[in-house]
Image 1 (cartoon, rainbow over the protein chains, first blue to last red):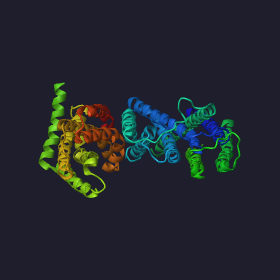
Image 2: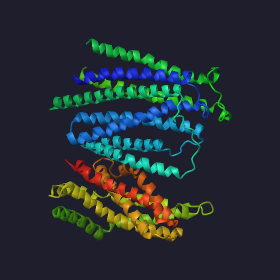
Image 3: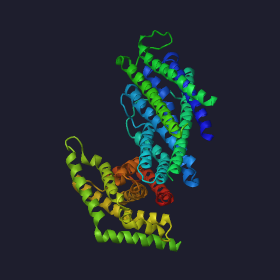
Length: 230
Length: 87
Length: 226
């Protein structure tokens, strides 16, 4: 059965991802060197950036599968969109909480309207709208379509949000940002970052498959319940 | 089926892994106590005392906690649905 | 093509006539605009802040909040007595219905936005500057973009249990670019900056509006299908 295969792969990838995460945590605390200017707080970078990347990946996946769902009406596409949206929200939350924790020490303020941070904040709310719309309709099929529309419009907005925030930010006096991910990221930092990116991505894929499998089982349960009633 | 028992035992194995992860994070609080030869002394932000360490600790804790909560939430829902399906 | 335009015109005319006769929405939105300007005026300590400095932002936010009031009720009329189903069963294609609703809402909101501008000029002692036409254009583009997104999501929210209260959550994240470019352009124009400085803003605002209207027209059918 399809779902069982998803569960196995999902579990395997999740465990792999968690192990990778532990490896990254170890590397980030005990192995990688401290960045000269920002000090110890720069290490948050190894969690913050991969979380951002994963949340964008998740959102893209959600928007893509939503669009295909409206076109093809295959329920599995909608389940994939839902699984991606849930994951995206988790990783966006991680990104939005670690960012200000980093920023307060490194640049003196919790929030600087940095383009990626602002985009993620708005995406977080678009995800919120996605879930609220799904859950508040009488007819679940309607809820799925509404949510798909939310995801698609959100995706269309991304270039506008990105450009507008960059322009907006250029007006404000910026703290001098020493960017550790500039053109010459030292070897050990690069290795840690890449490992973290890999771990987060694998973890997200594993969790996505499990969530997708869960949704598939739920709909099977619904179908059985309806048959039993009929 | 052997595969399902394997999956369940993998989940049981995952739990101690997660506990280990939590312990690792807690050990981050031990960073300031370490004397590691490779670490540079940061000069620019030296006046901030222990605060950066708290921020790093908080950030890493939040990340792992959110991940674990999501994993646990999916595991719980999967168990519920499978029970009701008679799995 | 002409059949399409006839249908759009018919639905548009229906909505405008209803609005002209009942004057519900225009009174609510207009009253809101004036009262907001008054309260904003009270909220500014003139010893600390020059009202002219923040007027543009307040103008746009007032238009957004007032617009939300009006747009939320777009499908209110049709919700009663199954009128929406009747509208959808007509030979008019779905995007024609959407465009008509958008144009009706736009007419309403643009009038209100000009009112807001006027009220703020009055209370905040603003100068219109060298290019009032550019300000009018910025307001027009902003109103149209807002109304396109608002109408689409008004259809969405009126199909949920939460109704209009869901509308801000759905629409506000999407308005960020519009506010940045619109309020930015208006601020500069009110400060008498040359038109060349805001050309980029108006272009981006235009692009935003075009995408919003187009996306709404394409996606509306998925929202209202049975």
